[in-house]
Image 1 (cartoon, helix red, strand yellow):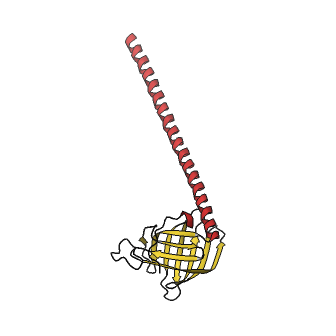
Image 2: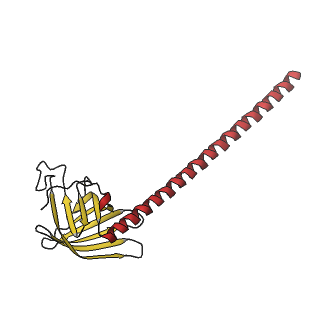
Amino acid sequence: MKRIVSYIVVLAVSMCGMTQIKAQKAVTKEAKKVEREVKKQERLAQDAIQDAEQFNQAVQALNNQSFVLEANSIQPMNGQVFYVNSGTNFVSLNNGQAMVQIASTFNPNPGPNGLGGITVQGMASNIQTKQDKEGNMYLSMSVMGTFISATVNLVLYNDSNRASVTIDPNFSGRNLTMTGTLVPYSDSNIFQGTTY
């Protein structure tokens, strides 16, 4: 009988110990879950602050008329999207001069600009900016040069420096859309080819 009582006591103590271990594991698991959620929220808050700073810098660059849209994708009129190098594909405006450069790493022919594409520049005129109700910024300008006559329409999306620009040639009707990030001209990381 003593053995049975001892066995029951040992079993009861073991069960309590197991219950306590399970409870500790549940508390630890819940604590880790809360910690992950807190870190996620901190990361999201930090990203939002960084996006707002980049947006403000991009707005200032638009207002100063000194910016570069570093494109990471190009979409010609046919709708097909091509992913490109943002250091060699861009639209810029600085000191009244606008430049559009398209370069291809896939083209074995160096092209007129030496980068497998074309680089054209011209004087910017009729520059207009506005902001919509959602906070998106718009810039439109006319660009006239030896090899370019186009209307350029740019959209800077609210709360980030993501932007897209549509280049609409005045005589061909073959528009081109470039999407990427808009940065101040002085902060850009572009490589310019031979200009026409």
